[in-house]
Image 1 (cartoon, helix red, strand yellow):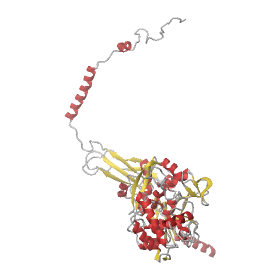
Image 2 (cartoon, helix red, strand yellow):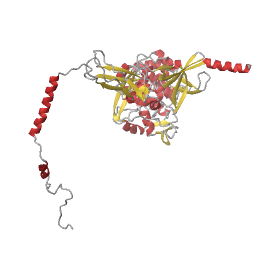
Image 3 (tube, one colour):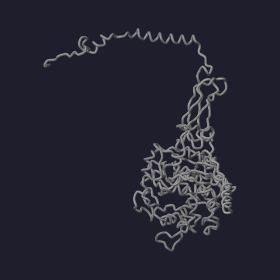
Image 4 (cartoon, rainbow, N blue to C red):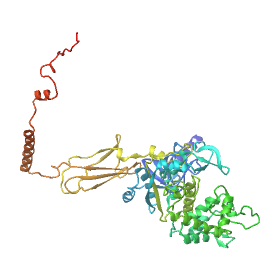
Length: 545
């Protein structure tokens, strides 16, 4: 009995300790790296770490031992997972009508992702950049010089090593994926579209925080200056983004993986000069086939200190790329300004914009400066495909398409019913709109919101339905109430006069063009009145039996 009581007490504690309230699905976004747990407690098995900006479908609110969780559904590695995320890691998506007007120039396939970024960072600005190249032509052109550090058959053209020890030629599907801007419109990757001119909101203290946990902390010995000072002064001097310089240096020198950085930071002798000066190349400029190429380039430029390498690299990036219109990480890989594509790219690594954007965004997260205004320039190509999936389906790399295919629904494809005979009284005309997904009635201000215009005067009413949460896109239609119900009156004499005039005109047309008899019609076509249309009559010809 005692054992039973203890078990019952334990069960009661568990039930009382956990309270789960089901909700009809709505969208929440991960505002920090969210950990998807198997059960709502800290010791539970981790199912997946959710990147910043990941959209999630919330299915229940959960309270467990005085902590708030959300039970969510997500697609991870092609599989639907249900798990628990701490509520303070999430931010509910909220529709912003004013933002909708700003993104109307973007194709619909771009807008949902832009909405998620805006929901997290409302002060970021998005501007469209039209390309004169078709998407497929661009992909084929860039594949000629596209390398990837992978041996996966789904990503590479062949197993042949092109450069170094790991670099192989990327196949066309891989190029299509990385070329498609829509695949990089997550919160973290989208900074590859951030314009790289100087952002005056970034400070020296921001630089120090971004360099934390790398080898570039404290004093730089060859200049006797702090690392953050070197980057900050270079950014100001050459009108270039501070975060871009730091992120690029981190990527090129593998700063988080090594204690002293790569060869460009350690420095080296030029070819044939083993006892000469040490040269540095922080951004690995000119390192086409290896670090030695970069050191040889540094010698030509006279970069015999790290300060010279940072300033020289900043000057190079500013002159060669930013001032030439390639002022985003994306454009420095994909030179869509140029007629001959692939001839003015900063890097051959097809993944380079993704890698550098990750370090930039990690830096933003580390220093808590996501609130700085950022301006993103996002390309749109001619004849873009509906979507471009990542070639390796076993990997999760910004799988927004899963959410679009499985979670989200286009509001314009729903069924709309509304009141058709509304009497005009002088007050705004608002049809009693109902929206259905199949047989399910959607909820206003949860699944959609409605705006009316031109609805206080006699005549048409413009109706715009905006999708919310699981429903995206907009649907516009014009509602024309019955004229009599609107109080519109037409004089009967005017109507009678108009009808008489119309019929008179029709009669005059007949008099001007009298009808032709059937006999004349037959003869005019060369037929015989006696034999041509008589039944069972066949004109005999010479030779008939």
